[in-house]
Image: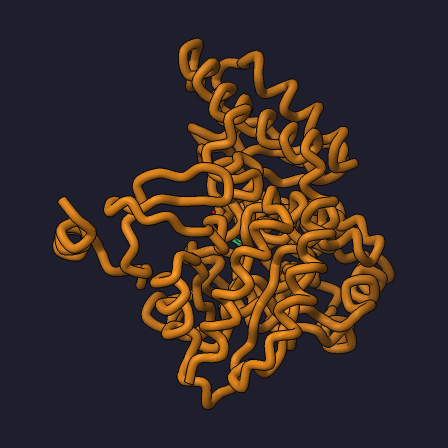
Length: 400
Ligand SMILES: *Cc1c(COP(=O)(O)O)cnc(C)c1O
């Protein structure tokens, strides 16, 4: 079977809810992936930042195999010997007292929203079922019915109502708009520190700090969705660290497992996460021994290999070098660390054709929102590999 055969089968039997590049990957190692025809590519998407540690990291693989031979799932009806250590190591690494494990990012976001509402009724004293949560325009927090209820992206939302009430959308990047939208019924403000899916949208300096201050002043929780920006991607452990912000609730996922298994978590103080009582929230697979063992190894790789520091260094170099390409198509380049968006001019004919050209030449990057090419390679990337990629990126960005 070759690439065409696989694509034909996939398109016939699978729902078309994605528009993937026509590359069929068979194997991955570090920053590289190999397709079924034996062609090698540099992965510049990292599965939307789930592969920060690189493909099939040997230490995470070993932890997964070892745990899979022992016990994979106990359910939370019983305890297991991995989850406590995961909690402890996650707390020590992030500075949050407690965490609650889930699987996908969207589930962790839902958990954070439920926690904020519970806090609103039990602690803040908002009348029951009146709590409001403020979010930013252009947000991406996942795909559940409640989460798409406050999306501003027609494709995510239009055919999927009726929507969950209780959310207010304000323009992203405008701290005054957040402050003005706060009412006595506001439970929380939830934001991405950098909007990845919106096209690597970096808010003005001071934005997060001002929002966090407005939250504090008005007794409102600040929730940071760091599912994509967290765990080293932007050159700090969390993108919030750039502004010295410690959110009340932080949501992480993606790289928390290094791409081996869906693991997400909600991080908060014990005052907040302590509000959940048995039976009020849960997940069959959340906090499984396999998930906990994999996540412990994934976190250890981020620490041991200093991936955050490498993302800062390599990101700065990569962005500098991209800036030097005199492409007629590029409007601007933005991002932090190794989360980089190349924004094309409206007349450039869309980002897709550039991504397809890169694919032909051995680099996998994905367009986001028609006009942005995202470069987000695994955080283990080194300067030689970036130097290998730059002439190709240059050639593609210079094409007519
Ligand atoms: C990917 C992502 C999510 C959703 O995560 P899933 O695991 O796909 O459910 C939520 N928020 C942000 C910022 C993300 O990038």
